[in-house]
Image 1 (cartoon, rainbow, N blue to C red):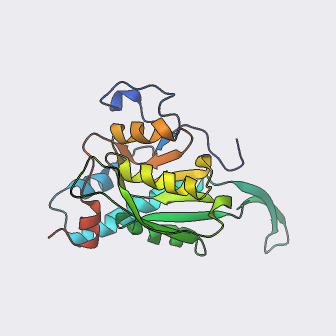
Image 2: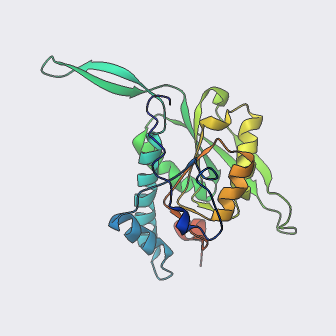
Length: 231
């Protein structure tokens, strides 16, 4: 286990899934340990009567919790600093070579929290769109802007929802096309469905997925509500 990587202890209990599943099937899934605060934030975001301002405020809070947890999966090294009293302190520092990639448009809602945690981190973008005329076709990559040295980086892939997993699936293929190692991809999301997990893990078993909830009823229209274009 590389330095800074926590143990796999955030696995959602199998009873939460609607279909049959095994520990091995979702061994790279990490679900934030639920508490009253997280449940409260999810309830606000799922409430159809939540106003735009409250939605954005509480979405940012939940996103921040996910991003903070995702940082625990990035590699670190030992570092000694000297305190103001002149005493050595044995601590940790992140290794160089991390970046974020947001999936336009809803993934951009997660950029703010990442920048608040890591001011100088580089963030790339992808635009992946489904064919409106044929929903059976895989989504198409429309636009890609990535750091030129992304193959040497750990990637926090940001997208709030995984309903079918098609968009994330296509984005991982694009990252691998740019020589990003699969096990260096950490998907940061808020809501996922069991089917989307199976879709992604079936082809990319070594990516990590960090989320707050696995539920058949995915919180769709997140991007429209966050950016105020749902009316």
